[in-house]
Length: 227
Image 1: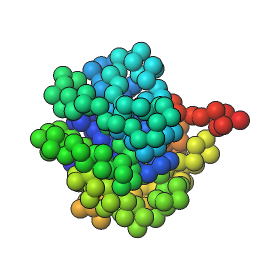
Image 2 (image 1 turned 90 degrees about the vertical axis):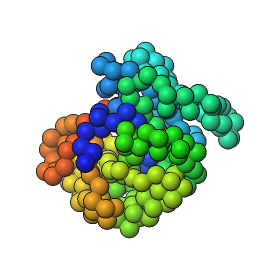
Image 3 (image 1 turned 135 degrees about the horizontal axis):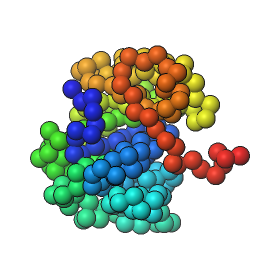
């Protein structure tokens, strides 16, 4: 059972737009950096917004190695995956975090590295990040459909679900608790894989949850959310 992500060398985070996977990727990388060598790989070739690569300077100041597609953060439409990404499977980093797009195209980028992931499968955790407040992942059926498509295109089995149900600063404990119930049903349907909850520490502390939690600090807050 995967109950502690820190025990895995390769953590792959995938999820639909708005799931918060990039936020969780940043949190894991920055939280781990003071104690171990960390690498963050931005493999999200689908979403031009909310990329982990946007925080490259902050990550590097914290000692995190950052790799991203060539042309990412530019006006070029289709980024190319640099050969340096392949090198992380032989690197000396204590932990490597992959931020991967959550639709079919994003999962295809993940599938490109299938042989390398399989070589290190016991050291790898593929996590599906879910926000049940988003339109495409509100129900168990929607989430399971997304999981199936990601597994088919990425060619890797999902190892755990991360319930990151939130509505930004308007998140309530009830939202997270409802998200946990939906995600637990999905985890059971996916051969009983583990579930972790993620969210603002203060809101998590007010929740009644049955599964472990990961506190998340918001790093990717856009300017329009400051208003």
